[in-house]
Image 1 (cartoon, rainbow, N blue to C red):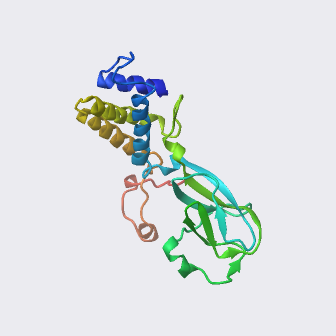
Image 2 (tube, rainbow, N blue to C red; image 1 turned 90 degrees about the vertical axis):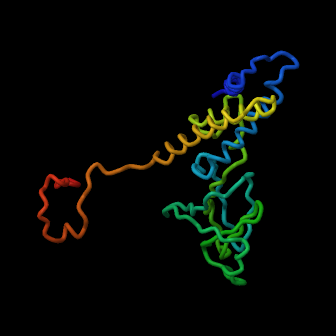
Image 3 (cartoon, rainbow, N blue to C red; image 1 turned 45 degrees about the vertical axis):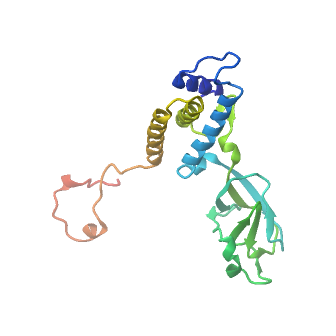
Length: 235
């Protein structure tokens, strides 16, 4: 949805269509603020279930005998850390609890590649400290603050099917501001949120068309009739 469509939908819901000077809602004032607030709320509700939708990546070059690296992108959360080396399969690098990092490091210990990282603010620390230079060894998956941004073309990162959530939450805020019972808008929000998460949970799931017998059954005599399972599977 375009930003103008979101604002118009909020007006329709709360039945406050006037755009005259002095009206209760202003597209460039409080209504725009409600929409921005709503986008932040939607991201907070969706983030635990679909963090990959709100991520960017940043590659980090390893420098010999250097254990700390500044992350250049602003971020809300480090979602995942991966090994990113040409000729090697991607592999997740464990994130160490920063309050327990002392249990994972030895003074003077170095090796070619680190096996763990920990974060303090915008600084990433690697352990053990690398003893060679490696370009782009680490790939960071970062949840960015821009996830909650609304441009003229609409929400930047929020999935299209969840745009209506921004409308419902903004309507809740607008109704509260103008003294209208906002309960109905919370009901709409919760219903759409529930449906959005339900669809998303099933997005990558696949179920087999046929059920194959167990390993034990395939190794021993089986007197079942063949129509109970697919005898040609997987041919």
